[in-house]
Length: 499
Image (cartoon, rainbow, N blue to C red; front, side, top):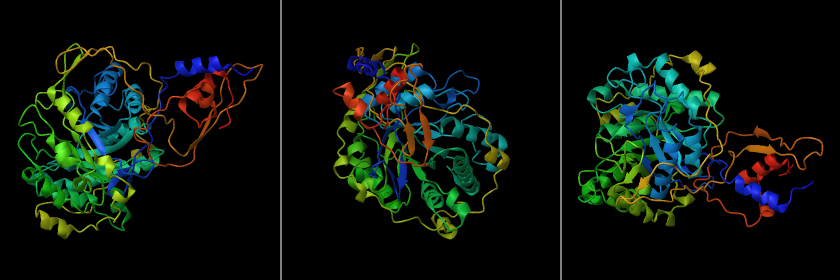
């Protein structure tokens, strides 16, 4: 028999915590774009509680494996108003399903570094040849395997500030392009979608400009096409709120220098703390103004938690409770007052094409920069072809809870009693997947649902921060397009739905 309206309604409510998934972000010209083809602007925070030095291969958890911590921080990140975080160090061997599902539920994408500060897990800037080996790529490929299944993974950073002085600039660039090549080839062979790969640079002129020219350039040669950066991040602290303006900060120079970027360019770190508390005047006076957004696709404020360098937005106590700093309150207000959506549209995207690789031109910017495009061969070709062997493949899971058990305090040290996250995403699978679910339950068989998924394309479009709409009746949910609640009800009640 067909389940009653009340039964369906109860089931829908019971399954309101089902994990859903954002669709992947793709790239069009010099900008990230969402599923509508409109610009996706990064509004974000760098996120590494405990700092990279707190990472250990032998630890039982990392910053994206503790469900309760992720629920706590997802509430604060959502209230802050961000759509993206950057995380520097994780373990490829730990389970990240709960945290990635929580981030997805609150509409947040992740940009993830593939390296770690431990020996053998990053490219040594002054001696890249010795560190670019099979053991290093084992970690890199294992990170890709661990996170490739999450649609809210925006992309991977292949390196962070590897080039930061004359010595590193003279030897490291070809190795960074080689790592990008290896990661992109690995993704093409072992992932079901294209995942962008880029580099995060230190704001050291003229090295950052030479690096940008080197990593963004393209060629008819296949090896250069695949080694090219899909995006370029700049760690820049030129604007100190309380001191600078657009004219005095150097932002005008950045806008001019990088004006012709053919790939997405964004601030992978920003937020000078010379004057505290920070007021983040660069948000509405620089980063997110119309002229700057033609060049930089938003950015990530450094950083979420208070560490030894005093850049934190919140303080995390030894008992796991969190207290907002005034920096958090000020950044929240700055993000809330942004108006860039008023002028963002498809016409805003520059699709003028890539620049041709020209070593002579790059070396004219910085004579000591190694602009060679003769890249070292992959030292782990067999592993690239056959896989890393990491079976810890991330996947979506239902949310166990929407409220943390940790205490959260505002900037006045008053406890916030309602710390429940708001689920905002209503997509259940990447576009290009079809599903078939059965209609009426058999009178003689258990109430089960048969779902067949077929991946018909490796599309990389996205529905960023899509707002979930509440159904006024369970029947409305049953006649609508496929959504997580409908499918879950079908599974529990044995309904066969033809969608």
